[in-house]
Image (cartoon, rainbow, N blue to C red; front, top):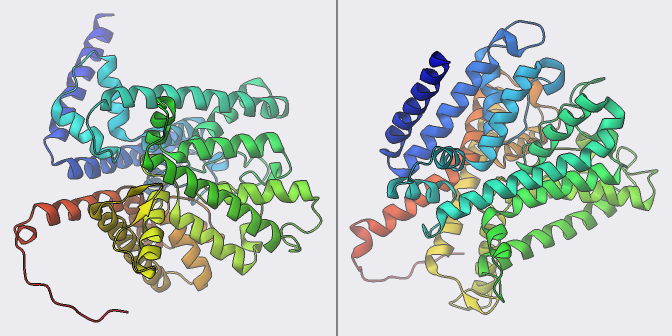
Length: 465
């Protein structure tokens, strides 16, 4: 008992010491480092022989790829999660998904609160930065609500899924699969453990099952809508904030528009929807509209989609979920602001107005910066994979957008990537989960605080367009 007590005390002291070292970094660098440390630790565990069913190490590159995909809640995999990984390996992946989805600082804050430790000002700054939240007021309360809300939603999701999975797999296995897929769906990760009979099947067996389709879809949407939208709806006072209105509007438009497009584009496709009833087509269309928003599950063969459907899927992957959520992509609000700005310019307006409010220039600049950096990363990734991989351009483009949007959907390229290709996808996944946010905000802060920004130069017109 004494040794156990000493071990706990030493572990707590070690955590506190590491935590203090982390927050000494500038906020942005600290977020980058914590994600990298978490990925490396996860890769080390997955590289152990005990993590693989064959009792042999998978190799550090493949382990690092899987750990990155799990921590960045992407879902791209080089081996089938069920067929290759032992229960130990699957649990490591699940823990990485949960921490990566909520954010390291959110989980660390909960641990600090559990230890009854006061959250310092520097830590609050770091938490607000990791959540992309520009207000420290009530940040600890927000973290508490996030953790409670996450637990409730994931438990409800697991309960609904168990109605279908327990009768199919038995109590223990059914409950485990229900919990695994509930967490994976809520965190928009896309990892599955359904490969009992065949690898990489995802949820194709449940394409006509409304219980599974709508439960997984609800988890994805709730996880991807954003923690701030949760908080705004929870503390509703007569009207919602502008952020919430834009996030809900864009999300609804993408879900409805995507469902309609897939329904008609795939209706007569013999590789996907042909032969289905109208209800079955609706289930498949709706899920295909939800999943590319960074979730990564699939109920139909993506490689058999029509070219227009693949393009729409790529667009949905690029946009992703809402800010401050478990989702990736450039985010719904960023996309909305960019579109609204373009419409305002075409109308000759000097202001961007929406829902009776005007958007600030800093928000517009930040949105366009995020979009430009995202496009740059995607273009570089496509060129790089075109050099390293012997694959069609369409497969490469789909793979890169999926990695950047932390989606996890693939046309079949991931398991066949070269080592160089795996390294490229790792960087893109990492950048998609961490980089756009930190780099864009870092650039904006430098622009706003630099000497050049304080100097007013004479204006001069140039030709554009």
